[in-house]
Length: 426
Image 1: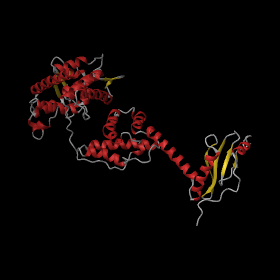
Image 2 (image 1 turned 135 degrees about the vertical axis):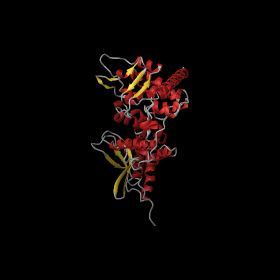
Image 3 (image 1 turned 90 degrees about the vertical axis):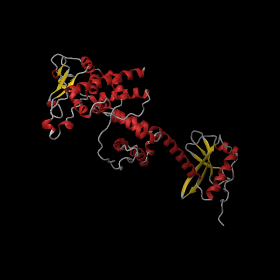
Image 4 (image 1 turned 120 degrees about the horizontal axis):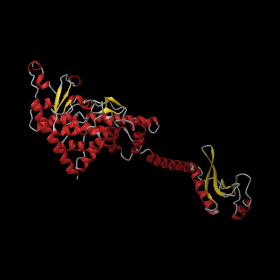
């Protein structure tokens, strides 16, 4: 039968006084003095005069030493009892030093995990990513909005190393289930770019968005129409942007295209006749287009600064021959302020918009105000409904009077919306 405990030490057990005598003078180097009574039971004495109890043994062919405690913490009797208990474990095949080391390593790993969880928190890493990579991008505000609205709710509070492909799929599936496939694919792209940045910095080992195939959808005709509340908020939010505010307001009132308004010239305006004629070479359909100037439009034009020998309404800074640029940055600032205004009125869910949506908004708004679709088309310069096929040869009515009435009605409606919006915010 295998013995569970080896024979006692052949050394005579030392007493406390004998130990005190042995340790009275610090040694020139670390000494291990066997204390007897238990095999391998030693007193460790250092040149600095420190003393502690230990147990020397062999496990898996290696010589090991288990520290039991200092002589200040343990009496000789208590230390000998500990040595006896650990000796039984060793004889039974245990390795107390290895277990103690494993516990230390596990505790160190847990501490490091906690540190990493704070340091590599997904929201904190996203903020760093935005500062280092996206701070100069025109689309910075939209990227941040997409992440915080569609990705962060599924990974909030997680360390980036804890995020899995299932988290990524949950974010995308939530959008797909609502038939928002274009946004789902945008989320996939933003997530993949973020995780690629994390990989480059050795924060994660794999890109959880990378192997998700592109989310395809049938070509969808954009149907974004701004509500009256949104129009009022955008109008008011633009007022901090100086001459850019005039650009936004003319887009809302006329339904013109971005570059048609941004590239407008004073020579195109007859303020006495209240008419803006956009020449054919500047108009998309190749026909000259006329816009009746309502009182609201004239008020906006009156606020546009004029410069000597400069024909453009909105010249670029430093180059008066070119239209001003940077509209996306301005739009981002206006968008942010408009969203804040809308939240105060209880509108929290606001889809992204673009300046081209004003054209769809005015056309739809005119129908809502009782105007025929062909008149709405003429106001925004769509001639397809009246001049397609044979109509291109035979139908040449200019709709000037109808457009005038429609634009006056739309301007009156917009100014009413703006006035209501201002009252609601006070």
